[in-house]
Image (tube, rainbow, N blue to C red; front, side):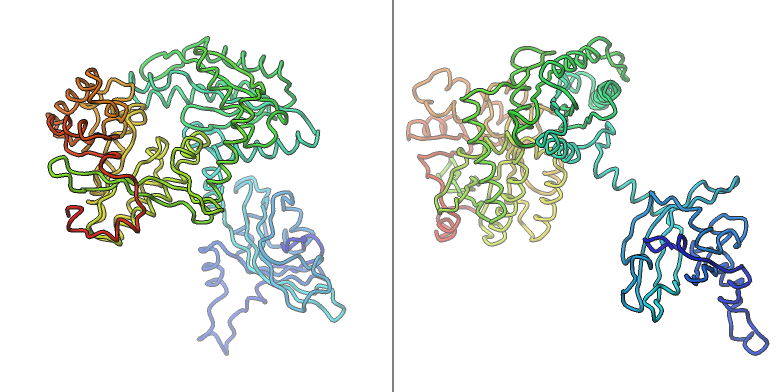
Length: 597
């Protein structure tokens, strides 16, 4: 028997006749009430199982009669001892699920269970080359404390094993490119960072982004963009050494860990990778498509003193490479100002994670009033972080860092929970919640929303989901898919910060939304800026033609409010109509006089 509990490795066995005797043959006295041995064998084979009894000291294994057929061996004599059975095992491919083998179990309790899995090699010319078996049973010990007998059931679990391996693969690999996914890449980076920290090796981490993926999306469609991504992934992974690591970090970004690289060799590798991608257009359904990369890198372990710091440094270097021009590489260099900003970012990131874990993320409500009568129609949810000393941080103090360090989706899940709870507790309340750009591609958040609005009738109709124009325009088709899914749940969708730097009038026609919130920078000095007046008036007229409601943000004076009302804006929001309030304050006010149903 092996130390994992398999029937082989330390003992002996018996013949097939003994096995049939163990199972039991019907006699004249009991034939009318005993299941025939061949029936038992047929049933066991049909469910992929066989049973055994192992006399450990004599090394004799008795099997049920179907064992040879199930395990694809010539006869029971081929596996009737521990020594013979062990010869068929791949001892490097086994795992103990419960208990220990009888050798390891010396001195244990007289009766001991075990459960183990291992690979069995039939060595048959016509059957399968290997079987994955699960072995469940127990063994007993003699008076001397040594193992005496083992009794168990062996089950063929090839199908289950294949499913488990597929699930394991999907948990660690990107389904589109076949590379490691973000979680597995981050885990690999952590392991490698630990190794370089103790001086076992040196390494570099590169973050490579496909420059023109959004253009490919818009010009040819998502399937062509996916083909381009897969082609780039294949080119990059095909040029790396076996010990290097590559994974898909995010939509258009790949992370690469290069062993044995200093700054000079990492730059040389980056130049070659960019060249291999640049030199030949990738073949797609739409024909050859040119692709280039921008790459940022950092040397491990210094200046990146942690895996999180390595990611942050590489992202900063990549951002700098993109600012230069396409097809550029930048190696991160320590700068005093950047180091100070980075330390602040890491402190804020730690504060966000701790606040999420401790339940110190909360909401404040800013009123949005009807332009017709200035009655409160709804509230915008503004996220707040309560620090350990009791002081409160506004969104501006930590949201930009959360977005930069990919903590936005965690915040969005928490804010959704809080908003749904408020809606459940107040049937007259209507809320708007902002989400980060990455959340529009987070199916888990959509599932979370679906579960939340299903929990109580009428919640969906009182919830507006806001995404920024920048996020929406980044990928029109994907954004519209997201917005359609939200609207199908009964919620409304708004575009926030509308007009902020994009071709807004064209975009308004492309986006399938219920409401636009005009960017506050056009409203803040509205009564003093004729250009802003022209833009806002045109936008309100255009939205009205499309049947889209409008909200003016940052309204701070009666003059601005009067202009907006005269142009036909639907809702007003800003300090003139009230600062953000705690949910408790809002709930304490008399609902009939402040907000409509």
